[in-house]
Length: 81
Figure 1 (cartoon, helix red, strand yellow):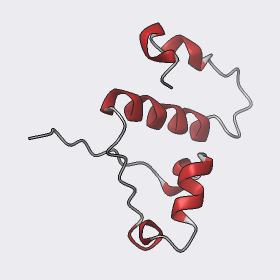
Figure 2: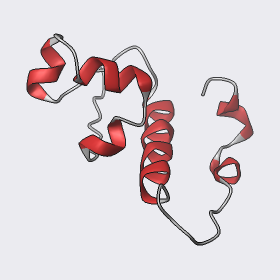
Figure 3: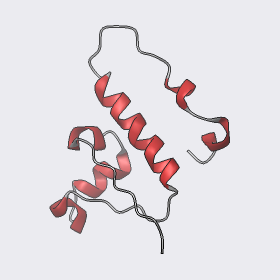
Figure 4: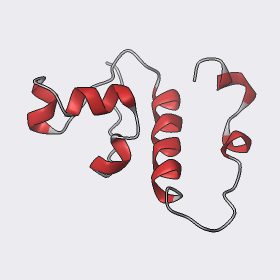
């Protein structure tokens, strides 16, 4: 049995992804449920994408220095991201 993970983030943060924005804003079933299933991707990759979307969302209107996100990405997953 496959292990399933659930990542929850604010809609505005999810809309920072073109793919998620298109999926959540169109006629797809996901638009009604506000849920997107990404079963074909490893959880470690999805987790890092969610982390980046939250980072982008949190610092969107920041006037302070923004920390470099690249430091949070392990080299062994960089290409897959």
